[in-house]
Each structure stands twice: as C-alpha cells, then as structure tokens.
Image (cartoon, rainbow, N blue to C red):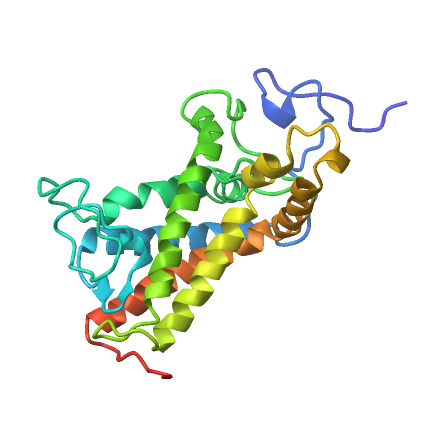
Length: 275
C-alpha cells in the first residue's frame, strides 16, 4: 500500500535525501523556533572570542595590585608587569616580545575548544552539524572526528591536566587578593569577591569534565572495592550533570574577572574595600 513516503530522490542526492530515506519534501517537521538556540550559542561564543582576542593582544592593563587578570596568569615572559608575590616565572626570558597572555591562553583555550559540550555548541552554532535536533545538516557527507583536524579533539584529556595546573595558579592568585595595594595581608575588596566567584566556577567546570569523571571512576570492575573513588565519582557525576551551565558560567566569570582588572588598571574604577 502506498503511503506517499516511499523512497524517491533525484540522482546524486546525498544525506537525508538519498534513495534509502523516506521521501519527505520538507527539510524538517519542527514548528518551533529551533534556530534560536544555535544562533544564541554562536553569538555568545563569538562575543567571547572577540573580547578575549582583544585582551590577549592588548598587553596592557592586566595588573592592579593585588589583582592580576586570569588571561595573563601565570606570566611566563620577562616583559610582564612586576607582580609582587605573583606567579611571575620568566621561562621565556627577554626574547618574547609579544603579549605574555599568548603563552598561557593556549591551555585553557585548548581545554574548552576540545570540551565535549563546547564541541556540540560550536558544531551546531557555526557549522550547522547538525543545526538542531531533528533538523538535517546541510553538508553532503559526515566523517565525524575521524579525520584531521577534528581527530585532534581526542587530546582533550591531556588539556584537562594542563587545565588543572592553570586552575591551581588561579587559586593562588585568588589567595593573593586578600592583600591591599601595599601587599599587606588581611584585606578584602570587591575584586576579592569577583575572584572567589570566578575560581569557584573554574574549578566546578574543570572537575565536571567528562575526562575527569572517567579518570576518577573509569576502568573499575567493582565500585565496592574502591569506595573512595566511588564517592569522588558520585560527586563529579553530580557536577557533570550541570556541565553546560558551568561551562557558560565559568566562561562569563573569567571574562568579568579580566574586565574588572582592566577597569582598575586603566583608572576607570576604584576597588571598594570591605576591610
């Protein structure tokens, strides 16, 4: 009995329009505004890329005692501002003439770029692969992450290790915010709160990573023989459920922390002190 959806497609058709698929004329059957989510994701990511690129190449207004921008920490070149007690490690010496942020941002950027959630976000937002659930992608063929350059996404776990080190340095930076402009301890400003919120979100996002969850609880035959790892795996799993929220929250918080330092360093704003 004919149903009107028998396979029928023009020669050379690919994807969902091949002869093996049902002959549905419409590109999709969704009636909601499905394009809002990928469009909003693309706009948000593009805004962060533009802002972070500007700040990374600016090479100025990234330190105002006792605050250092997370985009520039740790500082690995000799041309960094002198940060008393800060993470100044002149590994690259004086020959590095560009912004020191370019030496360190590759690690958190690589971690987020290969993150499972961010992959879905920019695949849909920028490449329309696919643009949304139940909406066919416009590409003629799909090879997934089996070819260069997307096969490099498999190094996500190694970027996770570097991300943990960077989060550790940012934790140290946050501890240093309990000083005043003269580097005396026992003080707290609005910037301290900004940095505390940022580092909490950074750690939450880092630990909610799928690679972290696998490292803690993966390759175990019996959880009952590993109660500590099982407990840690349960905590990380709860964070993992909110991985998307933590990804966006930490992305916004790190940009706000940098912008706060920029306002202080440029003289546009004075840091309110609580004590």
